[in-house]
Image (cartoon, rainbow, N blue to C red):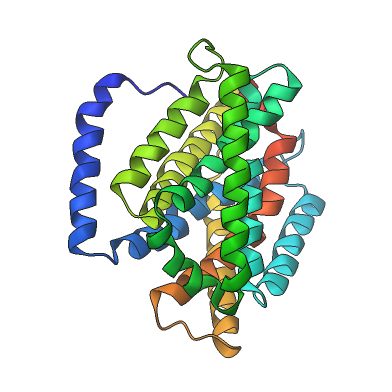
Length: 296
């Protein structure tokens, strides 16, 4: 994805300051923003996986689609019983998935793996380190009884991530390296987001705007490079199926031990859905990494 010009800071920073002021006036902006960005741009970037499951003849691979959909349904059915496990699963998957760019930009394998986990963890570890008091109530709403082990586990993983970050700073020397600039720019941007905004809203902007937007842009570029047809109807149908599955998950969870009558419980259902979708999504993206990243 093309680099952002420093000139954009003249509108980005004021926009963030206005957003921070709005959140202080209306604290529920974080939860509403996370839900809206997830079910729109966030789910759209996942729905585009359907385009990666086309064969050389530009036909849908029914077996791949079946495996993908089946794994999502099985994971969703299992994880909805343990929302705390779903949250930790999503965090661990993020360590891997959000670091694809860093893996692409570094040739030595040891450095590539190190930077992958550093970049992948920045969006989910900085909130624990910079805003623990603001984050913990949301964790309690999502994990409920599991909070007693989920929160210490997340804090412990954040400590390990800090150690990896220090190792990366010593070994890679980002002030001298030109190849890992995306990672360090992203890290600084996430620090600014988490200092100005609540952890939930900061992650919503990272996931819904930056990560999902970049993936959608890469998918559009990929289709153009490979000369494949862009089927709006196929994307809309996949998006509708995703939203219907989410609605089914919410209905089923409301029939069990939960009722969807507050923001925390809506977030619980979304965390379960994201964890279920992320595993097959990251596998598919990793298998197509060269197509998505190296030619970009």
